[in-house]
Length: 308
Image (cartoon, rainbow, N blue to C red; front, side):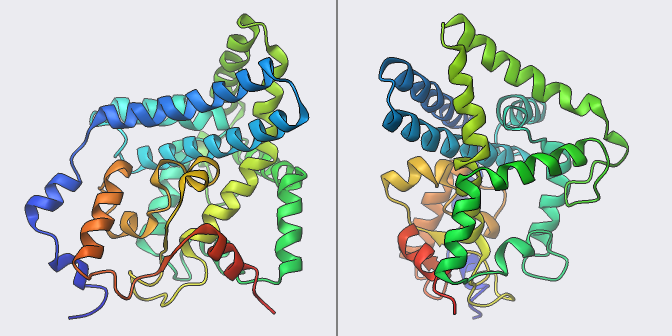
């Protein structure tokens, strides 16, 4: 029995059917949690204005922006909601557009990533191959993220993508044009309008500031965790990582079960809230004995910055 095929034999058809079963209320709960933590961060700064609460809010909001990106990713696989129209509407209007993303071009390139993981045709290969790097190099990357340099670079790339001036991995083709910015403006305008009605318009700067800083860092950590420093690029159990996450890590850098990425690659039809159970079943039955699993994000980042 091969390492990569072993996991298929330990799950019964009934268990697989249960793992891929939709529970729409769980997705609504994830959305409410993400947005609730965003507005909770706004309220914290509004009622306890201090440099420490501002910094805390920026990191929480950045983590929740990643959470929305994760749910957009979920919708791109049509596993966010059972009804396709609701899935695609929520994936864009409640998740993607507020963080200046778009599920439509994302879905096309992301499915290529799943089909060609760790091959030359993998569109995400460049995110994983640089690691490990030296501690100095890693520190420079973190500084670029938290100083906003990465965010400005991403903003320019997104503008070029939306206007059809880029042939990047989320190339829009004939869909490109100024009209693609309308949903971003509308959703962010609604967010700003809510804060105006609440009497806290300046708090919108936290949303923008997090997008340029802490969101960049959380996305970098996510990409490191998922496919860098692999065991075997040709083995599905060795080219994708699951990272155990404690409560604090789940708040700031691993929202919506994104840390169970190996299980997601093994079966993309499993909704995010069922991934921990899938992991538990596979682990208890010995199918993950040779899999790429890291005990926590501290160890992961130590490995990523241990290059020479």
